[in-house]
Image (cartoon, rainbow, N blue to C red):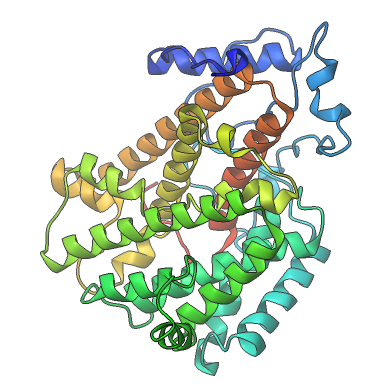
Amino acid sequence: MPDPGLSPLPAGPPAAAARLGADLLLQALTGTPDAPPAPRAEPAAAPRWIPGGPSGLGATSVSLARRAEAPALPDPAPAPDPAATTAEQGHPIPGLYFHPIQEPDPVRVEEVSRRIKDWAVDEIQLYPEEWEGQFDGFSVGRYMVACHPDAPTVDHLMLATRLMVAENAVDDCYCEDLGGSPVGLGGRLLLAHTALDPVHTTPEYAPAWADSLGSDAPRRAYRSAMDYFVRASSPSQADRFRHDMARLHMGYLAEAAWTETSYMPEVWEYLAMRQFNNFRPCPTITDAVGGYELPADLHARPETQRVIALAGNATTIVNDLYSYTKELDIPGVHLNLPVVLAEREKLSERDAYLKAVEVHNDLMHAFEAAAAELAAALPVPTVLRFLKGVATWVDGNHYWHQTNTFRYSLPDFW
């Protein structure tokens, strides 16, 4: 019998009303005084407050702050002083809607950076010596510490860091930057996926499959990172991750098929592909990295899935925008949202880029509205903490893109 306390949410309001409703809902949950909603596209908007628990009479039993197993997290970071921005920190995209964060803990950044390089070099022999500069320039330690400030230990942070590095190894080596190709990608991805989702076969053929898991760097990375994750997470969290990685691989294949046939997708088709070929596997494990679990039935609810999908979509468009100039240097046509907008809507490069910023902002507002609605409908401590974790991941992802000047630079459109 369905739990009457977990009834479906009502149909969402139109976009403008949803944004206003999200602002009012967050004010109600935090007890802050009424105020008009923030402008839609203000750059470097004030830090987001993500519900830490309901307030009011009778709410203490579900307060996140009162549960020993889910302690209250620090207050959101104050916005950095814009005057302090330097060339090394990069510059945010003008007009982009985002929430600034504090600099990630330098002690943790250093330790995660040291451990991930030891893992990559000594445990799995991930890359040849000539790729070391690119590995260091990725700054994955700073990335993961920024995205998971509530991780209880460095060991928890390493779960996400290994998986992130493994995913990028597959992307680079199989798909694009470091020798990848769309030709034959499906077979390579399927065999790599078996390092995440084991093959159950006959005794005659099992040894050949097991040997194959060490045959190239991406499979070694997947196998090792997943082994660590399985030992530290619950079976449902591990299976959830496998499912989202299958989504990712399907997105890779769609983009590869379009590349092989020189097909320029419609804008809506491109955005559909990006819902699969995106960062979704990263925020979906925020509870495992935080040392707790969002129960499988709550994670699987359509409302939760919408929040996660919107978070993945928004953060992936951030990648399109910050990597735009980098991808222009790649031979041939590299699909990203500004390129697709320019071609399909007959816009100049500048106008297409600025419209892509608007698309990102709309996705961000939809994400925040959906998260606020879910927090109000299901004020369960693990739901509230998970929503906060996903939103923190979104903010940390933007921080890393903005500050990684080794990889990214902005076009001269302003």
